[in-house]
Amino acid sequence: MNHARIVLFERIRHPDPVAGSMLPSMGANQPSPDQSDKRSGPVELVADPSRQAMPLFRGIDYQVWQTVLAWINLGESEILVVEGAEDFDILSGASATSNQVKSLASPISLRSNCVCDALRNFWTTRHKNPARGIGLRLITTASFSVEAEEPFGPSKPGLDLWNEEGARPTSQCSNLLRDFLLSDPSISKRLTEPFGPGVPSLVEYLCQLSSDVFHSEFVRSIQWLPRQPDVDVMRETVRITLQAYG
Image (cartoon, rainbow, N blue to C red; front, side, top):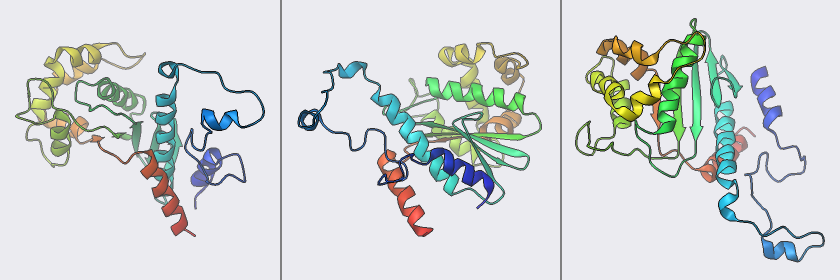
């Protein structure tokens, strides 16, 4: 086991040495209001559920378990960096894959904010790390939705087409994806927003790219991974995997 794995394990291990699991889900085993009434001590205030941050905690919980599984599955020459360019990055020699983790209930499309953010973050990371080959994966519980007006054909999500095109060695319809990013008002508005110092315009760069170059630099470098197992399945997968190690 390499040093990077040990460091990550120490950072994510549950601080209570007698806890039942290495990293229990946030909110797990919490007493209900009825149970708290039976215990001595102060009783929690009655709160407005709409103002509580449980979706945020679920998202963090899911991110942690995805990170743990990535740590377990690291290759011997790979290094995992938590909260680097993205939620976690996997480094290997001159290449790096950034991973953004999203626990989402609603479907996503090329117009979704998280997708536009991922494209912008990929562009920024590329320019800040010119000596590395950069890849990006968006890992999410969400499914894909079809863009309004079905620009990629009947019942065809653009993200689905992107993944199919990314699996091909040469471009077949990357021009459709590039043109959609540039022509759709909601997407182009997000991509046109200025970046930080030293990062050029993404839209201007896309405008000058051929279909083949867009395919090799963007489509093959970015993966959209939908319908990933939820946090309960992730937690059980980690438990079973660790048991297999003895």
